Length: 244
Length: 126
Image (cartoon, rainbow over all chains, first blue to last red; front, side, top):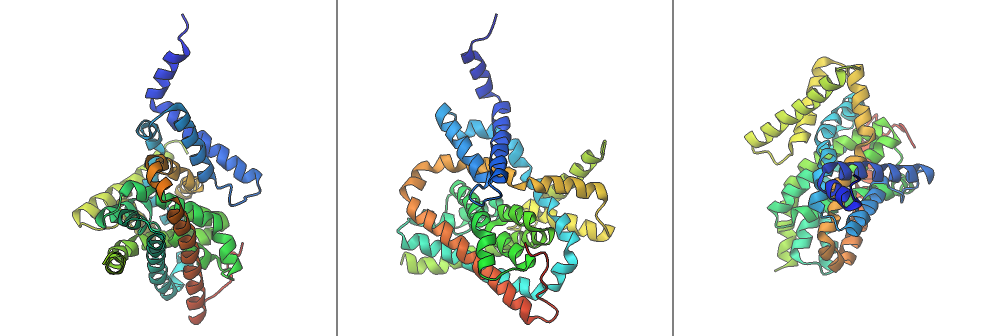
């Protein structure tokens, strides 16, 4: 007695196995295309994986909630991976320590720039208040950004998506833009990538060098902190001008 | 490796766990894993070096860091309507803001590093 395809589909659609496997497979396809293209930035593995997965989910009528029941096992590893960033940071700490004042000044300028530029542009282009608030913390790492978004009247789940898209954008344009501007030190490249594009920028910086990765991990951690202090403050000030 | 990988994951998860408890206890606005990163960093400073196996496992995890953002990114489908209504504002803001932020941060870091004596070494240029 052989089960019908429908019966098998009913089983697979309800179990986390299929969605977990698809997540890994879609990422492998993205990574393969990225390598095959000679590391062309636009073939970002995360971007490709998201496009593949969303297409499959829409085509099969699978909800995001069902998908996430499988994908949560991958999502969960973000926590221990963030903890593990202490290791490249420790290995490069001598270099980091010597850049103390430069780090502090770049952090304050960069963090404020991220919040102000994103909110002013979305406001100028006519987006409503909830969208402007959702994009304000987009350079901070996902869990911090979602918390800030809730605090300032945004939609945390929209913020999560904007955070990922910011990360991909930074990873795609980052190194070539910085190179063109004459920012060639691995420390400055890494710090800018981590500040503007959190963990996805850090993943990109780790491909440049371990030193860039260490500065990027540091920038990601510090900017999470700086954004949680600056974003509510800046949005409050800008809000008086945006929505008097 | 045998049970070393279990030990290392226990260390990473314990740091995160202590971090999560601390953020709630002290009502910090920083997420638990970032506090966990600080805790592990302090542990390494006390220890004085990165144990070989720990380095191997951590490097393996970090080499595939971007995979871990895929599930959250697929959440884009939840906001299809909102994104479709404001796609222009959002895409212009995301691209321009990322570029302005990268440029400002990178340039300020380069300039301030040059102003400080003994800085501006050209390390690890791609």
